[in-house]
Length: 283
Length: 283
Image 1 (cartoon, rainbow over the protein chains, first blue to last red):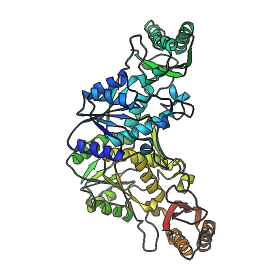
Image 2 (cartoon, helix red, strand yellow):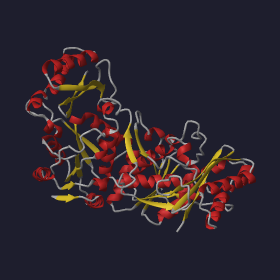
Image 3 (tube, each protein chain N blue to C red):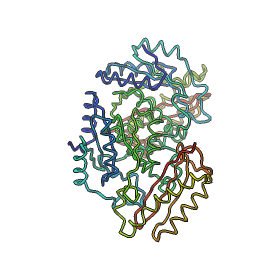
Image 4 (cartoon, each protein chain N blue to C red):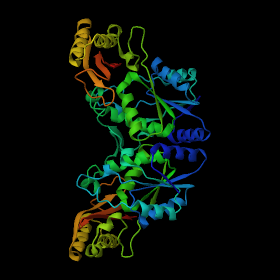
């Protein structure tokens, strides 16, 4: 397994591989790898010749009051996990390599960033699309994997790829969960024991919403209220940031459940901000 | 010479050519080709195996009151000129092909768009960088040519390529001028006989500025005032929009002339909005 830190070197390797006809699969990460990331790697591995993983905690996708400094970093642990998964190359650049002096270019997907996390994390998705565009140009992948755990991110990247005509296939991968339903996330490390016990309530509230819809409920507000009630009645520490029901095309709020919908939830548990979501298709 | 109208087909051809080891040169244009464009093609031809020209009048770089509808279009004439220059492929897409429903992704170079034309054409450079990014992803060039005539555009694209790590070489080409000094532009077609006679005054005012600097003048405002005076004293129809002196790195106004500078001018002559510029390096 190679570890490449320089952009020019990564581009040169990627171009050589493409010229040899190799199919490059790519999993961009911020490190602190868990089973969710490893599943992305395994799914991508099946569809490519060369598997490249990037590890880069991207400063421009964190707000000024967010956890950029605290975000867990463990390159040695990540390296071993990648090695075990048969990763061919880790791209592991410095911040200065990625953001040189006078950096001033940004990629932004409008409309899809308006709701869900976009409303509460101004500039976050602009930071994500910008770094992902950079990584795509550096790693030159044929196929890239993103997880449904970050559904808004996945749908925004998908729209960016379509709108900007990037010749890249996107491979969406289902959320990986702990046994009790908690979605895997590097930020779960922030949870203390008590918080950890309450954390699965987010997913349970999504399952409740699913059940309500299966029983015929079509009013979004009723569903949102019942989810909120459920969490408040069962937890001491969860502070809900949002519960939203949107369409999966443009991520705009729906008053009435129809077509393919996404229910997203974000909540604080102690200092951890956790998100989860569920997709439901109504015939 | 091939004419390709579909994005997927152009990408497929480009990828095939790259896999064969061919070096792709690219000249993006809005058509209405003149000697300036043909010079871009000739310079690029020298450095590539396959020369691709795009012809696309990009709606999103025109303001609501600008000349998108009137902009000259002559595909048959353009086709012949490209054929004469040995162009291999013309990429000639429809607007609907380039901007599908729910298009919502934009690329923006901040700071460099603040002055010169950026100040008077809000959204213009955002439209340019977005379409250029799309065209780069469709045509997959190794080398692209841009003219110094549109200096701000050239420097913005150069910054975009650097910031977003696009693995593309940029070939800057000097402005091509008529015998009397008027910079070639598709918009020169809008000029009537009287306006055409006055048009070279823009370039003459730039040469006056150069002379002043060579004689030791270092105060930007003095230079700008003398350029303005010169144009006002010698023309009846020129309405100056701006004269600005900026650094060539971030395109920020300079009070004092030093380093490498760009003097830009924009003016209306009848309904034609003309621009010109000159670069000067002070040791």
